Image (cartoon, rainbow, N blue to C red; front, side):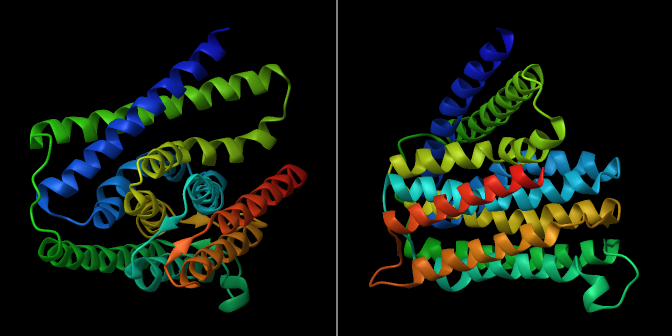
Length: 318
């Protein structure tokens, strides 16, 4: 019974935290005259990626490469195929031109960089596939370039979005952001712990549930935040959260993870990297096509179908 209480409490924390976080982010954009897209790419994306960062730091310290890789790649796949798919199913997502021509290509660059570094046996004739500390530093360098781009975006958006005031004071906005993020992390932890405990009681293999649940658990903040943003018609925050999180996950979190300790590349990870590459390319194609840069409901449905097929593959592989 306690496990079901954990899940219910976790869902309550997730729901309330998402609403606080999205409302705080939207108010922050209005108060300081910053584009909601930039807020989505920075404050929201970095905030909702904190669970991935915490999991990967512990995994790197303990030398657990499987968790480090599975958490990031699994989370990024969930972000695009499941979360963006669900958000697009709720309401067609219209995005700014910069998302199609700058942010999504940046996310694709991150995937290709990680795939290249993870295949040294094939590409560099090395004896083993290892993400070295040098690779980690290179990823962090890419992250600094992305940060520079965001700083320039903030400067330009302040000219485009003059200070429009806000319904909340800066103190209350900060409270909503910090409190909302804390509620998201606590809710995600309670929900995952409850689900794992129930799965063990049902004698489901821990090997089968560990990787999908870790990735899904750390992606819960992105999931509820993006869906809450879509329901509030805050499309820039919804999409910016997903794309920003995927860039942050690879360039920063994998960069930090490999810098802490070199990571042995898990066998079979190329399949997951291929799925992530295809998902990112589809995201670009769907939003590039048409008169407006929009993710239509039928396109969102395709993302969800691919995610369902990928989940079945994970179960079969497990």
